[in-house]
Image (cartoon, rainbow, N blue to C red):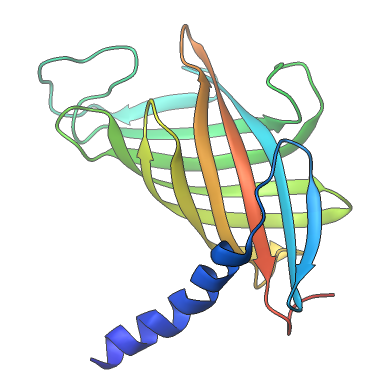
Length: 185
């Protein structure tokens, strides 16, 4: 029971922040809602298979493996540039380092973790995310930590596939970051 209350005490501020969030586009927004500082922006994760991303453990081979699936249990690591547009040659605003483990038998879902180091809107630092990813659909990942200007940050990141054909793939990463009143500068 105590663990459940502790979990709710951690989740309630996030749920309130998500409820109060305004919708964002690829244009950056910086808001203060009810004394809670927030920042909303989008970047694009540029990933190239066997250059910035590698399979380090092959999963259990099964049926229906395709370009958008990996076998159950596959461990995949990456270090990808985060650019300001979907064009790989656009300005780099960060780096995403992390990994994923294929967690579904159909090969479409993974448990993912990443540290995203950012230099945006005059802010520097990193956000750490952890959550489930779907290979072909948008997925929300909670922000579980931060460093530098993102210390004490909360919120979520939405990862959406943009280009999945070929060896280079692109994901749109939408950031919805909130700082509690005691951490806002």
